[in-house]
View 1 (tube, one colour):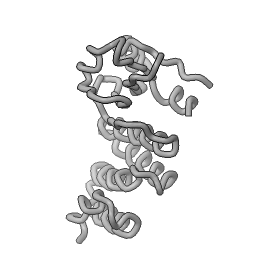
View 2: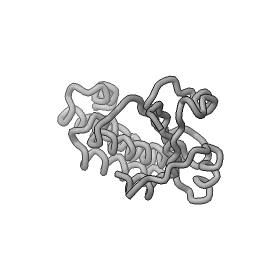
View 3: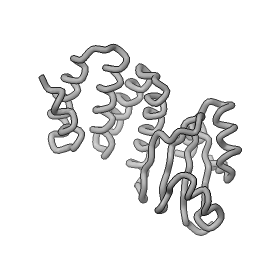
Amino acid sequence: MAGFVTQNFIPVKIHVKEQPKTFERFSVQWTPTLLVVDPAGSERHRFEGYLPVDEFLPQLEMGLAQAAFGRSQFADAERRFQDLAARYPHSDVAPEALYWSGVSQYKATGNGAALGETSRQLTKQYPNSVWTKKASVWAG
Amino acid sequence: MQISWLKDADAALKQAAQKQLPLLLDFNAAPM
């Protein structure tokens, strides 16, 4: 995991007792909180509370995908969301990744069929996920 | 491999802009 972090992020550790003002600056109220912030300073992803490695890594990948989405790099974002959902299908963020892969594909191509297909895929793979409910409006 | 954590968010943002990498900010209360 250290290699993944070093290759993909500029890592910063902020301790509550040393830098309380930085907690305020980023509206952090609880620890641990992890933020993925793009190079322009915009927050792209946040997760709070301890996570085991098999959930932590997918969250980091979600941050990278959201950062690409936030830069309007929709083809790259779609690839990242798809990879995440494929590599960590049992992680808590997999259905969210699938949802956003559909959105990214739609944003990249303007093809509304991508949303309907995403809704069907979510219904099949994650019938009880809130992301499946969110995508249900796309089902034709 | 160890992670070389920075402590200065503003300095890290400058590095992020230079390298075009996102920041990973870890807010914690663990003993140092």
